[in-house]
Length: 298
Ligand SMILES: Cc1cc2nc3c(=O)[nH]c(=O)nc-3n(C[C@H](O)[C@H](O)[C@H](O)COP(=O)(O)OP(=O)(O)OC[C@H]3O[C@@H](n4cnc5c(N)ncnc54)[C@H](O)[C@@H]3O)c2cc1C
Image 1 (cartoon, rainbow, N blue to C red):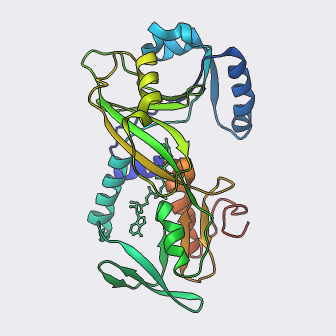
Image 2 (tube, rainbow, N blue to C red):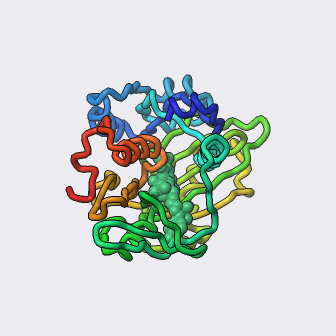
Image 3 (cartoon, rainbow, N blue to C red):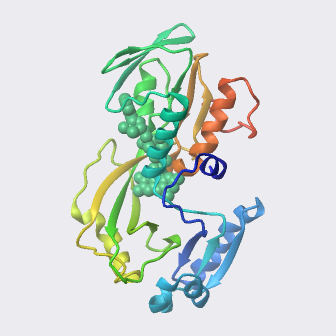
């Protein structure tokens, strides 16, 4: 992703100052440190901070540091506006590579002929290609089924809210997660985004104001005057979860249908890496990563 952003000059309100995994309780912090050690063993750079250290790094916590036992800072983490990133990337693909983006077109079925896909049935007619990539999030298992492919992907519903920052308010720059209240925050330019919750509710994108109670409770507890909490934009969204976590990549039973789905709660983080893997497979190049545990057969 870093390479792509640099090469194409993609602007997406990125903040590359790591992420804070915040704990309110000292025992939970100790347990969190043990859990995160696994990532450190695999090369992820981390720092352990106490409440004062958190406030020194991120002044938004100075008035509330008494509530914080400490934090694990994942130094390599970053945040940004994923929608802006996708729109900018689509623009580069269109302008530089002649890619056609068809928004508002619904895929209703895959048309299979033996071990090949020979067309995609859409609301704008049948489209044909040499190769197809299935990357439809929670829509992937529904469309895959039309060609007899069963994908173990199920929606896990989450809630996202975005608030305008108050002029002169004390808003966080560094993104993070309150590991006790399970709410995440990210600064997106002059807005603050807060997200939370994983629910099994099927294909239900609905929400009510009370679904955001824990988000607003956290916002008022940690960042009381950061943003105007009366002017939120709210939505519910569905994470495409697999039973064991990792996404499903590469070929299934058709020779020209490549899978790139099931990214769960980390889809943006993994998007560029998994796209590279699937591209490598499509052009017959060996991917950098061992695909054991990442294909449909696992
Ligand atoms: C609250 C919340 C917070 C999150 N936070 C993070 C985070 O901090 N970092 C991170 O990396 N990830 C995060 N995620 C996860 C991330 O959003 C997903 O993993 C990611 O969006 C999955 O990407 P995708 O392209 O597979 O699916 P999607 O982003 O869902 O995109 C699939 C697209 O396919 C379209 N589609 C589906 N079916 C059809 C069809 N039949 N015809 C035409 N189009 C169709 C959909 O409309 C959609 O546009 C979060 C998710 C939630 C819910």
